[in-house]
Amino acid sequence: MPAPKTPGPPGPDSRKTTAPSPVDAEVREKLHLEILRRTGAYRSDDHFLLPSGHHAPEYIDKALVTTEPTFTEGLGAVIAKHFAPWPSDVVLSTGLGALILAHCVARALPSRPALVYATKGVTGPHRRVTLPDEFQRFVTGGSKVLIVEDLITTGETLRLLIGLVRASGGSVVGIGCLWQRNSKVDLPAEVFSLVTRDFSTYDPQTCPLCRQGRPLNVEFARSEPANEEAPEAFRPRS
Ligand SMILES: [Zn+2]
Image 1 (cartoon, protein in one colour):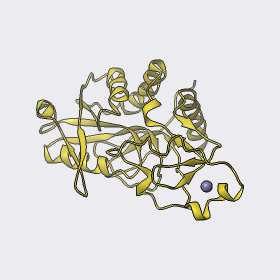
Image 2 (cartoon, rainbow, N blue to C red):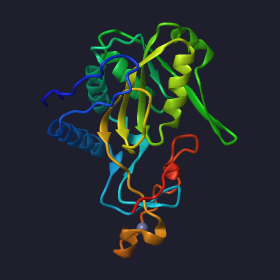
Image 3 (spheres, rainbow, N blue to C red):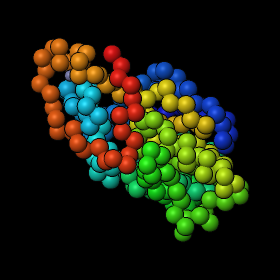
Image 4 (cartoon, protein in one colour):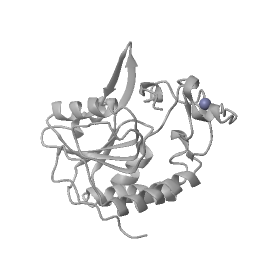
């Protein structure tokens, strides 16, 4: 597999988004998509009922993303290679869901960063992200932090986490993730995603797959954990 040729981030806390050459990006993305398909995490060419009630032709099952250790290590190494020129002191996982990937990224980084994770939850209408007490000394003044997420949907968790790092005096080197499923998400740090693919969802009333008479697959209708970013945040596209 050829090394991905991507221009790196211009520096810590950059606002730029990586813009790899279209051909390289396409080849790279196909490879990673195939890896995710082989774990069973990525399913396509179907007609899924989502927990939100919307319909979609494809689905990514977060729980299955890191079930193949050698694949996870390989994907983690690709993210680490991208960020290696900008040494980080800490790899911060957005939560337990991204922790295995974050471990693989941290393990592959030459700067030998520490690995910590945030915890997320919801209080009333507000999403909440915190750094457990025992990890707070890792993110202080001058800390260079690489954030690792599995899937970016709305980016809300990441925005909160970036705010938390900066409030502690640290800076964000960037965000490494497996899958950005909404390319319009604007985040205040550089995002390097192995797959960037808009996750199309349809209203049942206007769903083209319903119109084609394809049977509805309900196996994922209730599988999205309530405290994770769910496709409910999307406005359906047609
Ligand atoms: Zn449908």
